[in-house]
Image (cartoon, rainbow, N blue to C red; front, side, top):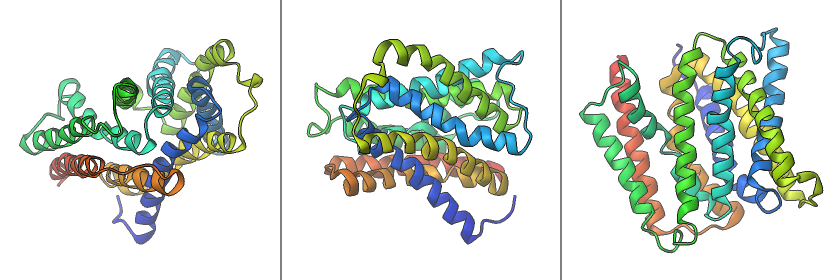
Length: 295
């Protein structure tokens, strides 16, 4: 891997902005669309740039090969479930809370990796990071101005969505020898297939008269926050490696909080700031422990 240059840091920042921008766009999308429709449109539009890249690079898509069950399972756990849960949750809570809650993914993945991999065990530094990070989330749930009995379950569903990402990542190790473009394209295809009957029978979006801003947001979520963001992430991984790319985790909750205030004027309380800082510190300690193992 090469030493990061200014362009690499700019691309990393751009990736963080794109992923962070997903949260307030989900909120806007919920003004007109239901959570199943949002999930379906995200995977449908997200598949377009990925499949076009596979066609351009002549990469075979194995969605219907002998490993189809892995692609279908990962597509459901890594895309269908979290996209639905996050959209359902964001309808009732501020999008900046969703950005902070979703940023626990590196912490959750560290916990799961301890139990399901051989070389990713806890150490003192990781344990401190996990405790600090999750303490910030517990503290966030005590913010009665933003989380109350009416939306407490919605906040928990967003946390569950972040856990689905982690479980999907662990399952992806089962097919880690395949090309990333092939895997991503295949799981997007299966996620679309899985959601078609649900969106058809549950929400019937063709009967809606959606707002223009909601439609723009949901298309953006698919093409940019799902499709193009994945391609950008892959470029960063190839050029600079996983450790460099993982630094995006610090930026997403920060940018998500800032963007939600700029575009939606969402409230930023003292407890939101404390939780945000705690999560970022927790991620820092976990990443620091991982970095030490690589040198």
